[in-house]
Image (tube, rainbow, N blue to C red):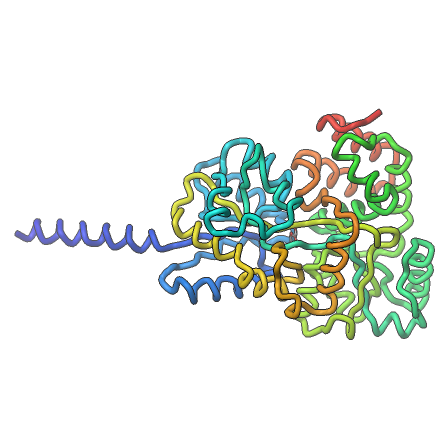
Length: 416
Ligand code: GAL
């Protein structure tokens, strides 16, 4: 009898633990920083209003641009231990790393069933697709080619016009330096911010079509523009804060916020960050496109997909359906500092910065970011990161060109 009771209790415990586990939802991302985390938590809160019994496990791994998260995710995915859904950039980061190796479930039919298939821009849908199937849901669009600046310092230096050319940009930086400010804040402890800066320089030097052509076989990497881009990067080095290699992107943003630095080139998650620090767009901080790039939009999109073998697949589908809604996108993006991926968002919810970004997204040339996973596969990105990080220490243009060329050749990009 005693044995039977114990047996029954064990069975009940097992059933209840299975039941409890079946109501989890593990969401993997790297959103732990100011702005990013707030946006994610706001999404979770709304989701839980609809599904109060689903227990969200926030499996975020700290480190801007997925510095640490991407490696953790890859190990989990390859080890057959996927989260229920995870953040992944639209483009090659999704397709090359996860879709082609067969690790993701297609979502096309769900998007149709949920009536949202045509609610996203065609071009965006294209880069989250592979062989006609959609593999992830874009939750936002970020712009990468933005210079943020401290308005108080700008005024104090007697600057009245936001620079549109490199000559004007250098003149402003010189003024800042003479007045004892850091002209251009950088925090490249995690490498990617330097590549972020460099891809924007490339965009400026190659122009949108030339830059895009590097990845679609129309522009050769072996072009004088690549060397010109490195020369321009080298000219910027004396204007960085000396401790740049010890700082993160938020630390660099903080230098601007604290009134120590004038400019910072960053994606517009920085506007989300500034807002969480209490700054108001257009009042405390200003922005403009990286010189020579106001005719282009460096495109970055965070998306979520459904890995094969997701432990709580039904909950993951509820999550994906939810983040595809207009409501979720309009909650998340004004906080995150991004614009919605959906085309039918409620524009009145977006501040003056985001309205600027939205207008440009609809009118200028949209080009894919390298460092944020859209343009090129991981192998190329890693080599470029390493080459540039050696470059700012050694300043060796020919070695850096050689390294980039090798990586390009490896990918089969045009190099002649
Ligand atoms: C980007 C990502 C953004 C933001 C940023 C800094 O790669 O797309 O959403 O999180 O990194 O962490």
